[in-house]
Image (cartoon, rainbow, N blue to C red; front, top):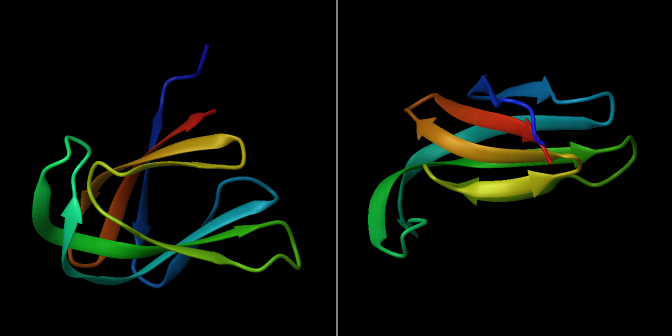
Length: 94
């Protein structure tokens, strides 16, 4: 059974360690069209999310939007909210 989610906020141009091996970074906040989880096309704020897993590994980059859900290593992340300079994430153990 997964633990209760914890809420984290990433400010623009910062990094956050999720564990000793996983770091997240956020930046490049702008409006864009995207498909929401319910399948509807929407326009709203999005942001770039950079993921680094392990030392010496190349970083991955994703463009995310509110409601986006992804799995990174042993974590499940849901994008709760994006403002002009920050992204709020809900994180649970996968």
